[in-house]
Image 1 (cartoon, rainbow, N blue to C red):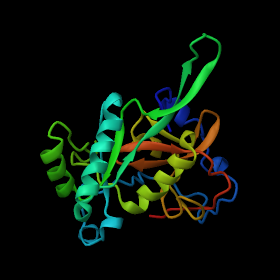
Image 2 (cartoon, rainbow, N blue to C red; image 1 turned 90 degrees about the vertical axis):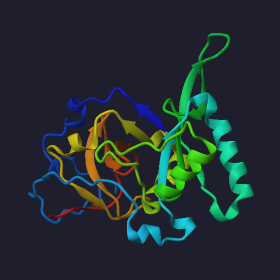
Image 3 (tube, one colour; image 1 turned 180 degrees about the vertical axis):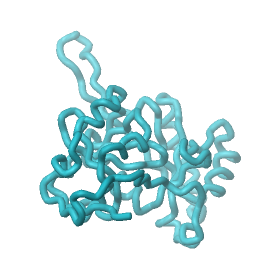
Amino acid sequence: MTQDCSITLSIADENSGVTSCFPKGIRVTEAELSSGSGIENVSSCDSPSMASAPLSEAPWGYVHIHNKQVELFKRQVDAYNAAHPEARHECFVHYSYKYKPKANGKGVVKKLLPTINGLVFLQGHTAELQQFLSTYHPQTHLIKNCSTGHPAVISHRMMQPFMQAITGHPDNVTFLRDPFVKFAKDHVKLRVLTGLFKGLEGYIVRIDRDRQLVMEFAGYAVAIRGVHNEGFEVVEG
């Protein structure tokens, strides 16, 4: 996964015609449907359905850890989980490929390292995660969703394909600098009908000369590559 700080709104809005930028395999129910605001926000608090979900399906939150402390933090969480299996919090680290010059100065070395933000995801309901962090990591706090002001809550249904995408192809997932709301302009909101991200919604946007699926993820705009052959439908209303 990479954090792309070079994306600008002018690039994101490069597609002037909504119907001409749909990827192969798309199914459009109303080709002339205007995009509207169509903003899909992550819930700002655990819903009743989330609260009753088993541990394996509990939602996720996330924290920022300094890169040099990420591996230590993960080991500490893993140790806690081993000692408290009944109250465990799965830990998932956000990695990306980094390119560093070789020691001899000839060429570069590609390494998979924690991102510059040190994103670490923890599974659990917001109140439980806050209690866990307060007790064991008092200097660490859940990151808030910038659009709600509350700790970000990511459903397990959304987190699963996100983790699979990162694990299999880290370079296919990019955190964008611009907020998700900006990508609604001149784009039709679509629902994915096939593949890993089936059921999720977002916009097809041209980024780095490639049409990518831009979704809202915990207050971020996240671009997904490799969706050209998936089926889509317009989200009506």
